[in-house]
Image 1 (tube, helix red, strand yellow):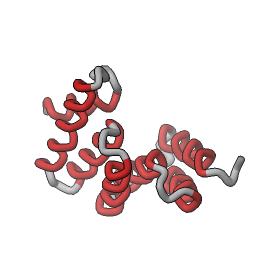
Image 2 (cartoon, one colour):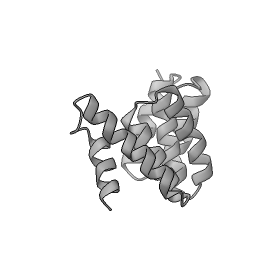
Image 3 (cartoon, rainbow, N blue to C red):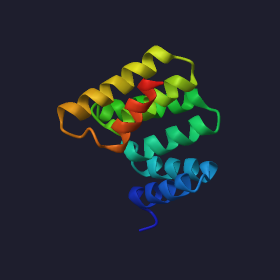
Length: 123
């Protein structure tokens, strides 16, 4: 299914894991062209833009992902990282605290995003 949003999102994820951020951003954009409300693709494009030095563009996708699913731990973690890249430590902390709290409230303290958020809060 090369014309499906999950196909492009999956390929973007593989490229992101390999550190191929330009390709990850392009494939995430393809996924979002097919399905504009696909939070997983938004988060990959946000991470790619943040990593490539475009934190303001990353914030748009991170905000949209959190808006679509306010309790998504990965979305809260990524938006916190984007806020950090923009120099907004207070907003970063708020997102990471929300991720840790929601993980605790739902018994998911061992979720990788919750652990990462807790790590950033400890720094």
